[in-house]
Amino acid sequence: MESLSSESKSIALDILEDILSAIGRLEDRTKDVQTTDDFLCSSSGMILLDATCMLLIAIGESLKNLANPI
Image 1 (cartoon, rainbow, N blue to C red):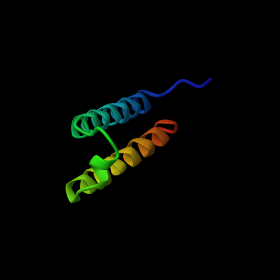
Image 2: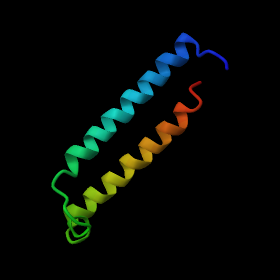
Image 3: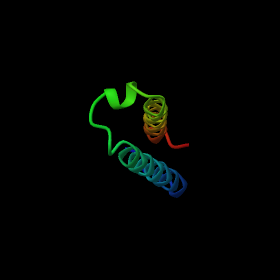
């Protein structure tokens, strides 16, 4: 198994910090959501759903990048 360079480790740590930050935002923004209706029954709920989905996509992309840090 090949060792990561110092630069690769730094990039991986940055990616992990971004993921943790995004998870924190998800938890904070959705703490009052109790059911799917909280997302679907209002315009503000739909906006929150869109934002939540975008953060989940960003986390997934970050995880994919973590597998191959430059």
